[in-house]
Length: 381
Image (cartoon, rainbow, N blue to C red; front, side, top):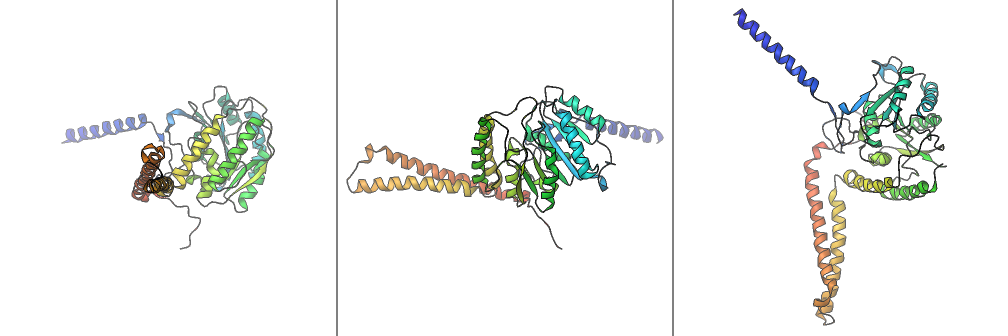
């Protein structure tokens, strides 16, 4: 009897050890967040999976003894960076001075190294050793600015969250003014580089890009591309941050019913290095704008998009064929030598197909209604 009991105990210990070892080997994933995830998780990571084994992190201070009551600092700052080793010491010094004055020490700063090829992360480690409120996250490869913001948003604990670029073109002295605007009742404040210190081949396409985005999104702010932004923390779970979607975070918040405004900020000339973005970002930006409209604004009513376009195209084809049919009936033309008749038939077919796609999309949307999340400002019960 005793031998049997001891054997059973030994078996359970071996099973527990095996299970624990399996858990240790299993890589934990940060799942990207397509708009509409229904698992209750925060929806701010990139859809492309970024494994935690692909990320190096500096240790966090347990309990945040220097933070606000409850271990939650008042202000968090997320700074994506790529090859900015020369800018980081000065940026950290200026941020430390500004944030200390703003919060009395209740802040945290996340530097997210997006696979830098220089010594940027070594500089972040040195900054962290001097001031543990400055934290670091390093990707093993370059995932892009949106992924860096998404991972940073997952970790912040501040009541207010700021984002800015690491190239010293964004001024930390703008943070107090943006915080005042948030506290006046807004949920998101987007910076506006009213006077830009960039060459014309960057400013001119940017103006065109912003004009198009204003018309499509219905949010009339001047500078969607500005990296300097301020958020209330409750906005973050409603933002889909992936691909190049970081440009459209104000539009996403606007569509979710949050109060969005802009504020003119100072823009400095680049002091070190060169810009990491080229003209191709505008092409990608327009493609992402199309994705944004279809997957977020019309995700629950796809027939409104495809049906409207389909009806217009089919109507044009019908009018063409109707006109030609009248001419044929009156003996004014022969349909055998009128390619326009085939064009009319083609337009009708394409229009019907688009309407069918919209109906299929509606059926898919109806089946996913259980995943719908609504932005509730407040309740009384």
